[in-house]
Image (cartoon, rainbow, N blue to C red):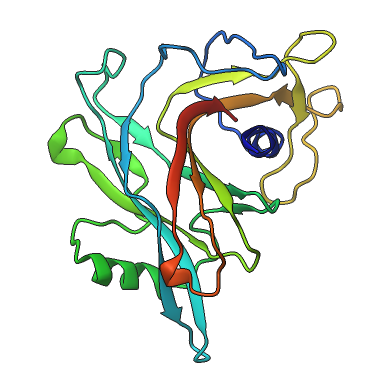
Length: 242
């Protein structure tokens, strides 16, 4: 199941991976790039709480259940490669479940959810997902706290993985399975989606990059009849390239 979830996100990640710095990577038995044993790029210290569920009363009187996971990020100046005045933190969190669902956390979420979570936790330092992005100065005084939110699936999900991008600077290109050369993708206009042409009138291309992600794999045995009683257990925590 782990390989299925990682493979799903490996393919999905090709279309929206960001570029920061490139580093050489080893490859595993499937040919997919793997993270460096000791990253040569910057990294933010990431800690989190086990995901929980919360019911939200919607405007029409119905109840919608959501998962949420609170987290903290720190620009720790003691880390060897964090030798800069600030690090830009833009979280990109995706959830993949064993039913084939792939969800971007914090997208298309009711505006009622975050205030309800903040009230529940009574944490005045908790920043909304829309506000947490930005430059992080080094040191404990500048820790950021926020939350990843996504809807509880209508399916009976027994396992899901959370992929967190934006906490590492490490990236790599995707090698072509035959030639070994870096794979490329066509550049499209961010608004129209139309191909961007180069000076010769040919479609412009760029290398495909993968980013180092923290992966948290949870098992959720039971059913969704009572989401507030949904058991959840961390099964694995590792880093992958996506």
